[in-house]
Length: 512
Image (tube, rainbow, N blue to C red):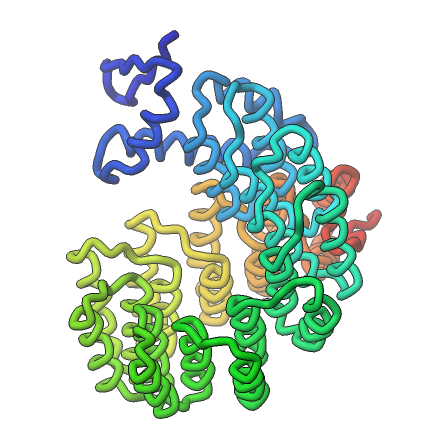
């Protein structure tokens, strides 16, 4: 059986055997972004993502729409993974992502991939829909047990540790063993996942409690100790970190490059560059080779210490160590230049990345926007913003929120609306924090119609607005005798809550 792909604006039709479709798409994804075929596939991924995000959920079921726009035979593993990746990046409604994942299973002969499953799980847990996440994991245990991995366990436990209690997290670990990973012999690897869940939230009292309670059952290894060391580092307590490091050595564990990188990062973040460099020397003395991460961390540390010359020296040292600079190293150097208020050198370095085939990422733009805000004002920010839009780059949530706040504070609500529209047109559902900032600015300037449309757009995409924004819209719509609009918003909120309760559990809407 053949699949026909017709490229837009062309009469040329590509015939592909169904059995080779997944391989074909995989190759196309890896091809140059300038390739017409790769461009067509990216366009199709963007189109499907936009259709899912724009779908009037929950007023209409999603599955019929998916059947209409995605023929089952056209599904491939790479396509499903890419759409779910875009849904994750666009802060899509979690149940929409779940519906798409189930569609890919039930309407094709594909075996779901580990990556697709983990992305779906991540989207659900990020929105705190733990019941749905548990249901999905247990369903996969019965239908596709090979999808269950340490990473999927880590995704679940990390979010439970973040949003729920110590007891809930501990019980979730037990549930993993008895209901999800049934028949699996839990070992140190699973123990490390549980510890990391607490350490990632800087809950070191809880992490120590788990360690003391369970280390007799699970033999700790160097990775266990590094996880705990990282937790102490993230808590910002250098003394506690160093005490634990010496306890680790006394227990007979040999430090590795990860151990040193954690300690170097802790000192660098406190502005103690000299201590970080001392540890670099110690690494080399014990024949523990510094990694690219080691140098990237030290470059950041030099920036915090406002020592641009040292940052540049470390940056230049990387290729001499037979290491290849990556986006992280460039971002660290850009950050160091900006901390030293050398915005022109930072711009030059950013522009030079393109010639080395290193694409700008979310950290690059966030760092540069921070620098522009402090050193170049609204004009510099607008210039970089326009470049970003021209490159069709979608900034990360924290950058969107930062830009929205900056635009509103500088009375440039036109730019705030422009950013909002750009994200919506790209199929993204802007974060509720961005909505809070924009609606506050619009209402304060009397742009009530624009504020109302933004609220509608976020509800139409299956995401809840915050309680504060709802109260604000309620007050301004009543003051301006726009009760019909308030009724419409409340109807949409109640309809959404009937299918998708707010992730925090609080009811938002109210009657007029």
